[in-house]
Length: 243
Image (tube, rainbow, N blue to C red; front, side):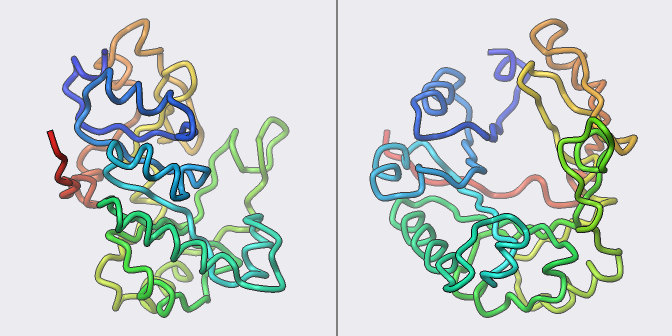
């Protein structure tokens, strides 16, 4: 209940919505928005019918519409045929049928920065399309001895990122987020409910909100609320629900 007491209105769930954990947590906190950011078994007709009423926005990661590029990035090995586009169109249709807003996230990297995605994005018509410049953080993906991954070869320059944005500027729902915008404008929580401060190019955990409360932990998060507002972090996500 700590988040509700602190006045939070937004909950983004990275959990597997095929379990009851996501829905029961949402009902318990009585929060206004549930946003799912993981592509999993929820995105089929059965999952949508069961959980769709609890979801306001479904965000899916689409880093490329080219099968070979997706395979190189690590998002599937269907290099002989482009099933990814058909899957996204099906998910888009399921969202539309359930009244769920469809959001698309793309990480712009060295493998996709020159790809023209306009045709497919126009077909998908996402409510929001966020394009992130590939971000390197120490302890996460900078290739250090304790890092989970090494994504340095996927980095793009600000100029390459801007060129990608310019080539898709006709998409009215596009929201560009270069490193300078995204690095400190998100609140990240780990499994111990500690905020992760990325302001020094790493992920430094705060004290847990279970130990010190939301406000004190938040003060240790390195969060830039003005940047959050400037990047359009507050937007209309309301959907109608029956009582």
